[in-house]
Length: 212
Image (cartoon, rainbow, N blue to C red):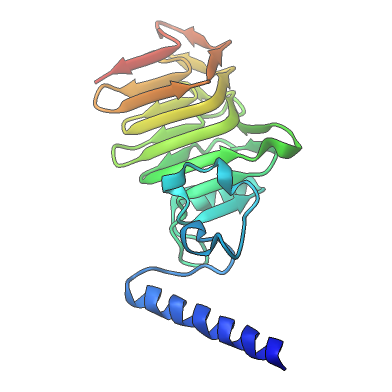
């Protein structure tokens, strides 16, 4: 009986926290983990890979469709995801680049094997818009392709940080940045990362390019 009363009290307290958050304009997602508030109760595997300031809403992902939804923003539970944790595997993008318009981290949980974002030679892998700030970590970006604009695998007009990332097998026709293009108005940081085996064709130049 005592244990049941304690459980009921905990449920009532959590429900009150959720209602207060809703009044403050913050949505609650029962399938994500608000690490800043509930890490003492729930530990999400892989969340430690997220940058500390991006752990507000962590979304574990194991399919390309779920990845695309999380990157777009609002999920089915009306939560703006701040960090996506990818399970081991290859995420084939089927010709649709990931379009980032807000601060976001996409990190791999490689405990079970490699994590790969694959453009399949059909499109670039990631585009960061001027309002975006993207951190990629613990994964590989590969087989991106762009013909009409800069950045074979990644094009960034905002802020881009790569932590322990490999970018390879990217192709570009015309413009600059066979692997990565960073606008002169943006910021680019690489830590512990490798950029290799990329190709520029038809007047394109540079493995990593920057231009206005």
